[in-house]
Image 1: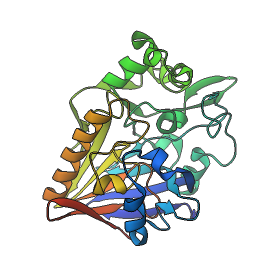
Image 2: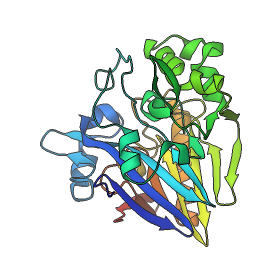
Image 3: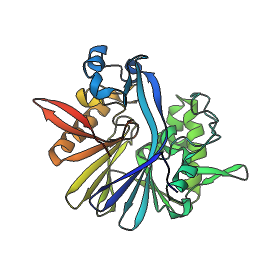
Length: 301
């Protein structure tokens, strides 16, 4: 059955399906990306409105979404949203969330949990790992029973017990790890990777640290067409215009900026579509050079 919250396109032989849980004005624009001033938002109003910015409230528009890739006969899920029934006292938007969740939306788009072969968590934040698991008889169990879960090793160390659950800075980090990561570790379905990890001939994970210690991007290459799913390397297109500006959520802003610049420059050089985790609209942009600067165009699916 068709789902109005799912759209698809192709990159060579790879089908890409976007499944949206919600899209809305989320946070004050300059709280989300503190280094970008009002003149940048206003000066790019036409490109940012309505998909990325709500001028009336001066709030950034973001989406919570999951990307499904069908590649080489396998189904690969990239990031899994917030999840239901989670204790997230540090984030009221995610705390004990209920409603029409990701599993229902995936099924309506033709993706059953048992059909998923690989789950990629670009990093271990609560809005990227929540549907890794679901409630089974009062406990958390892997939501995708036949999948291998690919987890960045550096994030697993930082946010897990070996790293004191993120050093204990945010209490939610322990809750996130214990309900969304630990169950897939115990089930034997998790693979921790470092540096680079090839999923198949067209899909390659590589580290892009800074947002978190293990933040990663997924590169897609098929029949001469290319894309890069960049996770939280970008929260807003203003970071394409100003790659030096990191979001308020980046643990190491300077390192995140260096990763962002590297990935964006390569996207321009190799003609990669850029697919961030939280962009509104179609969720996809094209990046180009204008003199010494970078610019973007919203891609229509």
